[in-house]
Every structure is written in C-alpha cells, then in structure tokens.
Image (tube, rainbow, N blue to C red):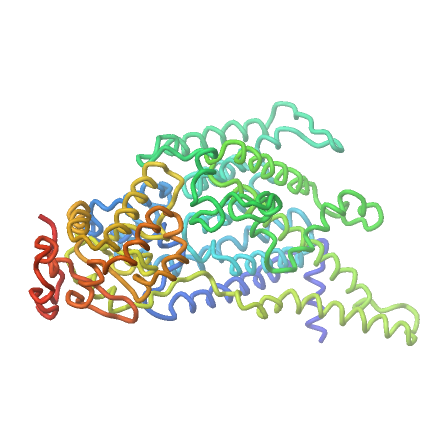
Length: 604
C-alpha cells in the first residue's frame, strides 16, 4: 500500500523529478504498446486484410514489388498521383528491401503510436506540471486514435500526430531546427496540416494582452517564422503543379453532382445546415473530433476555466505559459476551416483543419481537468488531518478514495466497453478463391464489375478493374469524368439484349472477364443500389431492358462462367466471343468452361 501511495504521489508532484517523469512516461508507453499490440492482432487475424483507406493509398504500391502489375491502369495511376512525396518514398524505401507495403502498413501503426507518445507526454508537461496530466494526455490520445481509423490505416493521415506533436513541443521552446524539420516532414507526408503550422508560427509573432494580440519586437520568433515558411514553401512546391487528372472541382460544380449530395459517394452538402457546418463528413467543424472516448468532453472545461472559473479554482494560473496554445491552435484551425469553405475544394476538405487540431485540444484539456480533479481528491485521501478523524472525516476520506478510483479506473477501462475499441476499419476480403484465380491470370487483364466485390479486386488480386464504387472520387474533374463514362458504359452493356452493344464496350475497354452476383439482374436490388442511383438515366434504361428481354450477359452467365464463389460469378468473355460476333449463333455453340483454366484474351 505504501508503494502504491508513493507512486501515486510521484504522479501528482508539481515539481516532478526525473524519476517521476520516467515513471509516468513508462506507464504511457505501456498503454500505447498494449493498444498497438491489440491493433496488430486485428491486422493479422486472417488473410486478405487491409485498412479501408488502403484501397486508396496502398493498393497501387504493389507496383513497388512488381512494376508490371496494373499496367496503364487509370485508377492505379490516379491514386498514385495523389500520394505525398514523403509518404510514397517512405514505403518505396522499405519495398526496395523486400518489405511488402501491405505488411508494413500493418506494423507501422504500433511504431507510430510508440513514437508519438513521448512527444504527447512532453507537450502535456509543457502546459501543466503534473506527470499525471502527461499520462492522461497519452492515454486519451491513444484511446481516441484506436477508436478511429486514421492511425491504423497507415495512410498519410497516420503521420499527422507523429510530426504535429514534436512541432508543438519545438514551437513552445522556440526551437528553430525542431520547427523547420517537423514542418518539412509534415509537408512531405500530409501537406494540408502544414498550413496549420504556418498559422501557429504567424500568431507566434505576437503576444496576447488580454483579448488583444500585439506584434513582438524583431527576434527569434521572426527568424523561426521566416526559416520555417521557406522550408514549407520549398516542400510544398511539388503540390502546386496541376494534377494530370484535374482540374480540381469547384464548390459550384460539386453542388450539381449527386456524388456530393446525401446518399452520394463523397457526401458533402447536407440539407440540414447544422449537420453541414458542425457534424457533417468533411464539411463539419467537429465531425469525428468529439465522438469517442466520451471522456474528451471534459476538455470543454478548459475554455470555461479561462473565461470565468479561473478566479475561484486557480487552475488557469497553474497552467504554464505555453497555455496560449489553446487560443492559437483554435484560432488557426477555425480560420483555415472558414477559408477552405470559401475556396471549395482548393484547400481540400475544411474538416481536415479542425478534426485533428480540435481533437488534440480536447485531449489536452480533458487530461488537465482529470489530473487536477485527481489532485484535489487525493488531498482528502492521502493527507491525514492533524486532528483525530470522526465519522464525517472517515466518510469524506472514503468518498474521496472511491471518487478517485472511479475517475482513474473509468478513464483507463471505459473504452474497453465500446465495441469499436481496437476495431479499426480493416477490410477482409471474403472471396479468396476469386482473388487467387484472378492473380493467376495475365498481369494486363481487365476486369469489369458493377458489384461490391469490385472494390477489392485490384487490392487483393493485383489486377485492373474498370471501375469501382470505393475508388470513385469526384474531386478531380478529369478522373471523375472518365469513371462516369466507364460506369454508364458498363451499365448499358450489362443490361443490353443486343450483342453488338456488349461487344462494342468489351472491345473499347479491352474487357476480359465480367463479374456478376445474385443481385446483378434483380430490379429491386438495382433500384436500391447507391452506385446506380448516381446515374438515374442509365438506371432507368437498364430497368427498361430487363422488362423487355433477357440481357446478353445473363445468357452467357450459365455457359461461360469459369468460377463461382459464394454469390460471385466470373464470366469469361473469350468464351462468348463467337456469340457476340455472330448474334445468330446459339448458346450451344459455346465451348464448355472447363476448357478455360485461365481466362483468354478478348482484345484484338
């Protein structure tokens, strides 16, 4: 018991020794490692597992190990063109050593969690002296990261906090090299947040006098701003070049696209203004930053402390001078959020500037409030009164101990009650035979599909798919226009009863196999298909065809299928070529599917 009391007192020491800090940091790293290992268990629980966003940012990296994969593929080339320079070359460096990008992406979240935790601890102590505050900051941040998918995705977003936290520590210490290096790394891995860095550096040129901000005399803050700005601009130059699949869509154009409206692939414009401005995906001020863990809501007490509670509690006075971070970071994020809305979508999604910054402020604020509460309760429990304790004294001490235990245990174990904790958005392919079959085909094979499984084809089989719902992104006009053309062509070909129409689409896009499932020719399922609903004219035509004649592909499905797994059927178009080119030929003239162990070529 005495050992426990001494350890607890070390966490509450307002003038912590090196040993006090090391003990609190070790606890923080222990929980970071625990959560990371639980995440590893999810990543390696089976075959064909990848983070949801990996189907955007990782699938094309198979080219690092085999440059012949996915040749001249629109989707692959597009997403590769979006990759930040540092992120791309980071994975490429490991691939040169034979490390698969998919394997690296599963291990990386644990490494990143362990690397960001010491900087979170250090930042918290720069704001509030108790080691317990540093521990709570690390605990809450790691919990929030593993309740979301950013860190586990190992995509550019996973590198935000490993660079953002060191930058804030360096800024508080006015470290020239620290700020310059971290802003360079952030620009190379996740460029949007480098604008937040520049905003903080700009506000750091002045100082707050009450509610007024005044410029500082020329000095270190100005050198810090100048050098960091030059470094950021140099690193951001590559992103100034126009995207080959551009231009970027404007806000006015986006309002006319079903993709950006409710029910669309990239819903942005919500009918409810409260949802649009506060909680909407990509558009909302808060979005995911305040969802979980619920203990983050305690962070809202910090502005209340600053505005009025400080005179009675003294908590605001206990915070160290870098507490101006709360105001600077909040103003910077809010300013960029407004600017991004005014210039849609030139600065990407407005939420990117508030989601992580506000989330970090809530983590720090909640940790400080929790630590201060534990400190006050500990005074009732640990420090004995000089007078003998009566019934009231023992009751007060007992209630203090119970409250303290409830706070500590609740903060640590509360996330374990959530089904989403350490359940990142990993996608597990459900058709292993399909992926293996396609992976055995020529590397330049072209797959056509209008079913959900199309989302996984290029990721798990390394073969090109003509279009997929998951990889339909409307932000660049050139890319989106080509995807739209492909989808409308596929819908026309899949539901036509005219072999000439199907043959024209097959030859135009060089399609080798076509994937169907049990709902492909079900009118009710087609009408409810979110992807099809983006193309109302094509959908109406497809439904009309179904009511008048049997589509050609539906006829070929029985005779030319080379693989059936679950609900998915693979139709070999080389098998049906004779039927497509000679409409008078009957289905009986087709060769049996067992003559096609590998899909033939339909080009030429």
